[in-house]
Amino acid sequence: MDPIGRISARRLALVLGAWRRNGSRQGAADLAAAIELGVLDGQLPVGTRLPSERELAEALDVSRTLVAAALDRLRDAGLVASRRGAGSWITAPRGWLLDPAPPDSPQAIDLVRAATPAVPGVMAAVDRARLLLVDELGRHGYTGRGVLLLRERIAARYTARGLPTSPEQIMITNGAHHAFVLVLRMLTHPGDRVLVEQPTYPNALDAIRAAHTTPVPVALGEHGWDLAGLEAAVRQTAPRLAYVIVDFHNPTGARLDAAGREGLAALLARTQTHAVVDETFAELDLEGDPLDGPPPLGAFAGDWAITVGTMSKSHWGGLRIGWIRASEDLVTRLSSSRFGSDLGSPVFEQLVVAELLDAGDSALVTRRADVRAQRDALAEAVRRDLPDWRFRVPAGGLSLWCRLPEPMSTRLAVAAANHGVQVAPASRFSAQGGLEHWLRLPYAQPAERLTEAVTRLALAAASVRGAPADDLPVA
Image 1: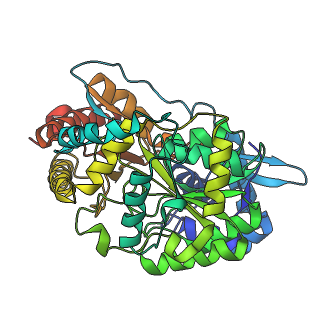
Image 2 (image 1 turned 30 degrees about the horizontal axis):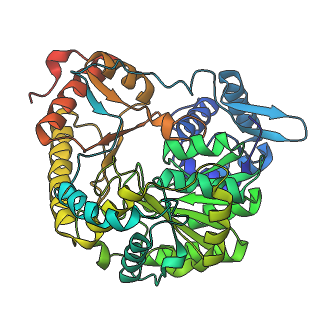
């Protein structure tokens, strides 16, 4: 893969940290290992252009010969590619992008999908929607931007969260992913670049590639978004569009605070970059009320933010209804361009969602309480059975993002399938592979199911690391 963005020598030195082992005389080997770890952890995405040997030697206060030897090791390992006149950049060795397909077994525990059963009240909403359907049956059924009643209720929710919105700024879609695809197809052209977080939602990456555009990854740091890194990537790569998840990020669970949103909005305005803001998990605030959280990014970024949302995580994935919140002009353009792919969303499902929104937050309060209990059960099980795994307990969303004790995510996914657990290797959440030190564990299952899944994962991890099963903690 060709280079897509440059990291400065100073920043690379910060990423590498204390890379030289105490007392080690193998400086080149230590430096190569540190850069490899940065790739495995996703801090150095594939395609990142490296600084020159001279610049890196000065930043690290080592000889240029040592840096050249380290790069030679990385080239031999397939982690770095070089071309005269283009310098050196991170690449992916063959086999990193493999996505093992776990066997589909009724006994297997699915920790791939972060999706829950329907909330209480869906059937009651269906019954109420049947009465509303009577008025729609005399019409043609093609609703264009969507049923007005639903658009009004979605607009009211945004207004309550601090983003004044009219129904004319809402277009109903078949889920948030469909919404992203519609925006992607209208605002980008083949060959364009799309800025993404690293890690990010795998289906968004698939959609970007399907549109013949290139994802440009910017690593999320230990404490979340690196606005300086985002700005550097925007200025170096000139992306046509950005895709961000600032509310309970998938997969890390991080949430960007109001000050961070203000900074990100200023960056979008300065660089005139549109951003699709995926709010799939915005309503799954497990520690508070979403109305009390930071306002949507659009409240800071104005028309540069195109917000997409859905009911799939908060209420039920079987309700394939989502939406786009944008300027009236953009919604009009999206409505016109949409007819090339589909003719609108189903009327009855829109009415069901409208009734769910009208029923108040009681169902969501129950959903949040259930998910919070499942989150805590999963966290407790991981602490007990996998004590060398590290994670932050997220304040919302549906998954733990676990740091593994060694780079084994793909191997563990394969081994876990043999123990009856389906997990996605972290490379699926990366634009170009890597992230082998990480694993996403959704807590969308009942607590006892999650506990059993962790017990099986502990056995799989032991087999991958070569530890005897007898040494495992007792569940």
